[in-house]
Image (tube, rainbow, N blue to C red; front, side):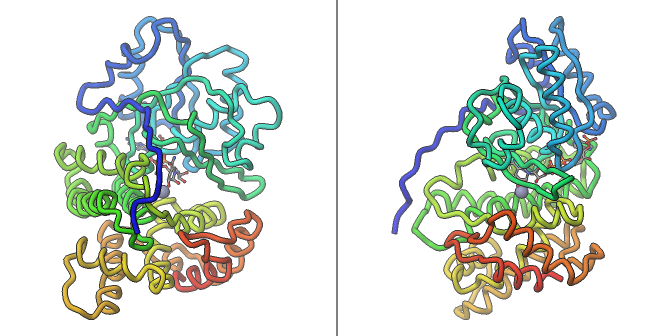
Length: 387
Ligand code: NZQ
Ligand code: ZN
């Protein structure tokens, strides 16, 4: 038992703190023609966009507006066309994970010869060059600001699929905590839950004596448990907000996953719930994770006990009891953020079970989890337990 062999390289420059958007001027070439990519307008309302535009100074730029939550291939391709026609040579995503993921896909699709949907069906592996891009993130959750992944949906075919490629690390991300003050409570809660589950996907597997990743992961979980509710209750508490944001970034920038087995089944099943029923990403995870922890309690026994003891301070020698309590604490934490954790709370009935299983089969997601033993039939039990 030991850390697995790994390589770790994260090339993204993080610029963190208040009043840092003006640094865009140093980070983007003076001659760049910039396409700013945004969502449905939140960054106009909270004035992040106007600060970004001011920071660009004399550079030529335009704004592409309308990336939707759970960004679609269809909308992203409109941006690709605009870039090809007007020769933008730098992309700046300003917004949440959806804007960042769409920007990554767009950056990789501009030079792609052939049907760009192939990028998604190939998991991003066939991207060979990108238009340079950076981010001004406004929603702590996904870690997209410092990783090389994204998730793209296609409505017409009911697909929501991940892409990964080393070329998809942003050049920089400017994290100004004050730009997240305008988030509604439900999005703050989604972000805390998403970051929490990112950590769990890389931590709650089986013990290999990976002391550094384990202690980092536990520290980040504790940080979210402490700073998440503080942020939710006091939106302009800078101290809490700054810690929450950095925890969310660290949760999925590759560091805590280096050298350890990883799960990701909660995410893959969750994506199917989002594309089928439109449930927010962070909520699908909060619904599924407690059921998955229980279903996989034998495989995950060692780490479940460690999690219960070290993160929730559970005591005693009855390990099954610790596991039950750890699962209950996890569900209660999500509920305390205002996230409902059963499908019935979202008006989804038992017909969802077959639909999710069909989608997993269609997407060839038939051997999920750190041991590849979450078959569609195991996933069926997880969804059934989440009704
Ligand atoms: O569209 P606008 O008007 O900007 O409003 C957004 C959107 O309605 C709003 N918002 C963002 N920043 C705001 C704000 N409202 C007020 N003030 C602000 N400062 O919040 C809403 C949700 O935004 P979205 O970007 O969709 O949320 P999130 O950041 O949670 O991203 C979710 C997407 O990321 C994917 C998910 O699957 C989902 O598609 N993920 C990406 C990952 C990655 N790249 O590594 C990993 C994750 O596991 C996740 O799968
Ligand atoms: Zn996630």
